[in-house]
Length: 303
Image 1: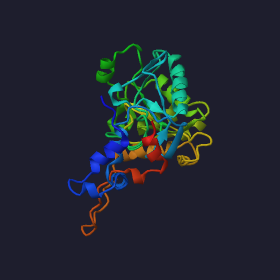
Image 2 (image 1 turned 135 degrees about the vertical axis):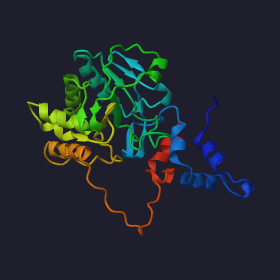
Image 3 (image 1 turned 90 degrees about the horizontal axis):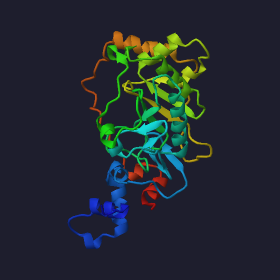
């Protein structure tokens, strides 16, 4: 496939049908940067930028320079859904996944990890799916214990993870195991990790069954969905000045918070009254390149 440069994409997307001879390429590029959805620019990149590794911006509004690619298959992992080309991340994220997969491989019934989405080759907004995963510091880990690590590319497109939730996420189901608890605990105890998102029933189950040090539970937070996988978010790497840190979790182990989530699932609070005269909320606008940190333009245009 012929390589499409950023400049060509910008010009093609924004060149007007008339008056093109009177508009400079720079004007086209400026117009494109403020009008073309950034997901279209980042979504076509197939490889990382030729830059020093660096995350820019926040987890849901940024990009990543010099990303590393998680190999499709390793001794203790396989990257899934390869057609998405989302097995890229900051080198610290790739190292973390390798380390966690080795921990998983030591658990009964697990050969390692099936790894879901990390990031696009240059991060940024995605064409589909996540709002986060933009700076190469987020990773989705499947709940399915790998029994084999020789899945073909086609098998990785067709296989699905397993759900661990029951009662819409209020409880875990029979797929939950001590190994899931141990894996989440190992991830949370890693100092590189800022947050782990998992469905409320899993957090409450861990709160009920943990008999040792409970400090790691603070990092594990209940969130909608996240019953087929759990979402790991790393801290900004040391010295990454352009990276916006995740806010620290509230004090304590967070168990009361998770129990309240469960209570609200089982007995939903009444909906808030709607003001008929209130203006309708505006639909969320797609980010453009000008919405992202200024470094992201160089990330896109790099070889």
